[in-house]
Image 1 (tube, rainbow, N blue to C red):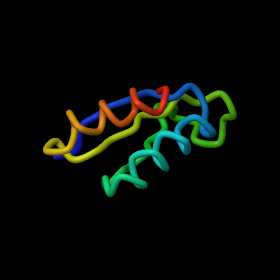
Image 2: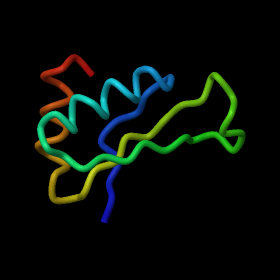
Image 3: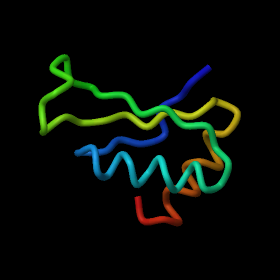
Image 4: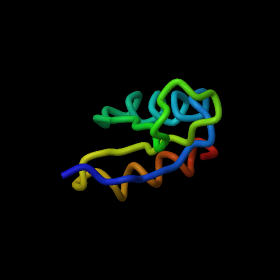
Length: 65
């Protein structure tokens, strides 16, 4: 099951979070929270597998997210 481990206020931040997690071998999904997917001011959820949630949160904190 997928679990939200972080929220990003823009796509650039979401991409940074995704890259930080993927560099550690974590499988990541990024999902827009807006109904209008093309909107520039979207917020994004960063999701990982439930089994990797705790370590993923630590990775994000270590990388300043």
